[in-house]
Structures are given as C-alpha cells and as structure tokens.
Amino acid sequence: MKIAELFDVKGLATIVTGAASGIGYAYAEAMADNGARVALFDIDRAGLDQAVGKLQAKGGDVRGTAVDVTDRAALRAAIDKAAAELNRLDVMFANAGIDSGPGFLSMTGERTAEGAFENVSDARWDKVLDTNLTSVFSSIRAAVPHMKKNPKGGRIIVTTSVAALRSEAIVGIPYMPAKAGVAHLVRQAALELAKYNILVNAIAPGPFNTNIGGGHIRKPEVAKAFAQAVPLHRVASTDEIQGAALFLASPASTFVTGIEMIVDGGLMVGRAD
Image (cartoon, rainbow, N blue to C red):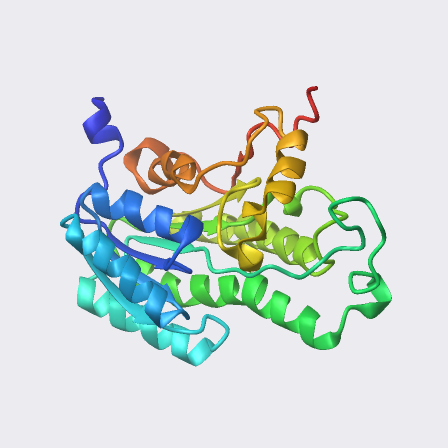
C-alpha cells in the first residue's frame, strides 16, 4: 500500500478536546492539514478562536466550540452537535487535561510543603480527576453512540502520559493516578468496543513544550532538568507527536487497539549519560 493511502485521513469527521494549544492543537493541525474535517473543543475561547483562525488560514475545514469538558451535559451536547454538523463521527481525540500543581520535591530536589501528601486539598484532587480522568470517560461515552452508527466504526485516541507508568516526585500527586486510570480505561474500552470496529488507543507523551502548568517547562531551569533525564537530551516540540496521531487515526493502524504508545525521547528507558 502506498503511504498516501496508508495514512489517508481525508474527510474524516474528527473532534479534538483541549485543542486550543499544545498537544491538542498539534492533533488538530495534523488532521486538518491532511484533509480531515475537524471540530476543536476548548474552554479557552480566545485561544480556540486563534487556533481555528490559524488552521482556516491554511485551508483547513475546521470549526471551534468553547466547552468545559468537566461539564458532562455540555460536553455531550457539543459532541452531538459536532457529529451532526459533520454528518458522522470518525475520530475522537480525548486530549483535554490540566497540571496538578507541585509535587513533593522542587526542581532542585528540596521537599515542598504545598506538594506534601497531607496538604493536597479535596478541591485540587477533585479538579484534576474530573478534568484528566472523568472527562475522558465522558468523551468516550458520548462518542460511542455516533461511532456505533458509523459503518466503518471509529477511532478514539486518548492522551495519557508517561506519568501513567511511573511515579513522579516533581509532579502533583493527583496527576499520576488520574493518568493511570485513563490508561486502564482505554484498555477496557478497547476490549468492549472492538466488536463495533471502534479502536481505542492512547498516546503517552513525555516532556513536551506546552502551556500545561502555565508553560513552566519553558523556563530554562525546568527544561534543563527534563532534558537531563531524557536520552535525547531535550524537550520535544508538539509537532513531534503528530506522526503518532496520524498513525492511530489512519488505515495504518487498522489492527491496533488497546495500546499506549509512548512518545518520550527515551525517558522510560532510563538516563543515558
């Protein structure tokens, strides 16, 4: 099969949550640049409008919807509306997520009071779990009825994290169990939905240059600390995740479901030098 056919996403009706910036925008851009019809969802109206404008300026068939993914009724209504406007739903990128605040260690190795286990507030725990785990469940649940009606089935691609696979000292406690829960949710959904040719997979990024946590990874000292732990010795740009997104959304992955694809520059392998 030719590459143009193998990775063909032309015309695919696609929804991306958390699409105004970062990895979500990279997913939307990869799909739109290759002919998919894309609905961008984000809570940030200004950022969403800017993202839609950028993609439309390149000729992309895109539209934007401002929605809070933790509002289950609003999210379902937005997904239903987008599927109706696009006439079906082929691909759902459940990507929206937030940072969880500081961990129990600072970037320089000192213990922090704010990140200590006993000081994690109920509100902080609930917000991270609602955004990073429950919203993914809500996204999948709302997408499934549309994909079951689609003769070709569908693709659900969820953003997890290497934090789903390892403990992190500098990342706030709620983040790891939320992402680990999402990873297992992906496997459970893949098991049930295979009958309907709905393939469910995850992408687990390592350190990427995004706005999460206020864009703290762009600070030189933070970027340096992450780079030291990555065998490739750098933080990734978001366009470096687009290949994985296209693979999982396209005919190239017709026999792939229930996996978590790690894109981390070798972080999970270990420190090299």
